Image (cartoon, rainbow, N blue to C red; front, side, top):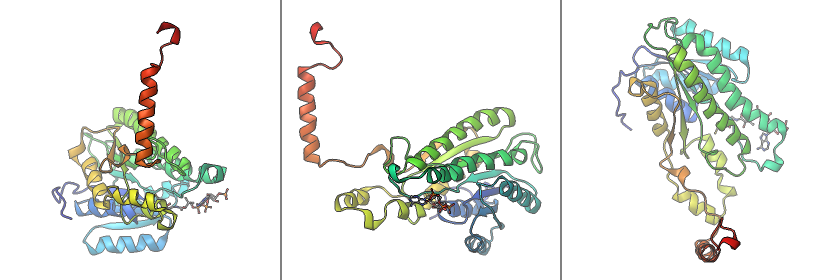
Amino acid sequence: MESPFKADILKGKVALLTGGASGIGYEISHQLGKHGASIAIMGRRRHVIDSAVSALQSLGISAIGIDGDVRKREDAVRVLESTIKHFGRLDILVNAAAGNFLVPAEDLSTNGFRTVIDIDAVGTFTMCHEALKYLKKGALGKDLVSGGTIINISATLHYTATCYQIHVSAAKAAVDSITRSLALEWGTDYDIRVNGIAPGPIEDTAGFSKLAPEEMLGEEVKEHVNLRKVGKKWDIAMAALYLASDAGKYINGATLVVDGGDWLEKPLRLPKEAVKQLSRAVEQRSRNEPVGIPKSKL
Ligand code: COA
């Protein structure tokens, strides 16, 4: 799909993306690169990074790939140093690395819970923390007018509550909180903007295939899933471009929901007829017994 943004809005900028070699992360790498940025991708799987970098280079995008796990501080330091060594500066950090699997809370081990918190929340903090010295205004290759920008990829799972996602919901709630805290502290002190993007269901991603596997869906749920508005990776990448470019220069501490309104609608738990009946019964009861007023006062 054609981008509505000018092709040079990120000219001269350097972006580092964790999880930037696949899924939503790759599409953000691709679009930031197409709009002028040089791209450094950090990931755990060498072959996945290599094919992402070749794909970007074949489009004329200046790109490198560096192995690393966001759970290891020494990897974060090394990847940032390599990025600076190669490109001479850092303007945009996108934290897209994430871990996820479906599991009922009662079957999740402490280590399973901790693993996702470590990747999503601690990993995001570590990357931001280690990138700070390169993102500050006046840092290598930057002027004294403005600092760099950070985008944290989040989710909408925790806005309400989502079954079998206790670990990810807790992790993404922490990510959103990190976004706001850093936006406040670093926006004031260093002119660094820190924002988030909360994608809805996005087709052709690990998240989508892992979290709504065909074989686990009953007919009723399948129907509901089919009715959901599913987005494209491109939608998330356009939001990232908006936030990373000067178009978003007054946006700080926001987490932009990009989901076509999906989170506003909870999955159906009861057949429609039953809800209608229940609704009438509740209405009837509340007419007879006004809530919150003691019977003695009536
Ligand atoms: N159900 C229950 N527990 C699970 C699980 C599942 N499906 N998958 C992993 N776990 C538990 C493991 O049992 C282990 O806990 P334990 O030591 O108490 O047994 C813990 O989680 C860590 O698992 P491990 O496989 O050692 O972690 P890893 O570091 O190799 O992988 C994951 C991390 C599990 C998050 C893996 O899914 C991953 O790497 N994901 C990245 C890609 C991704 O999920 N993308 C989608 C983003 S939306």
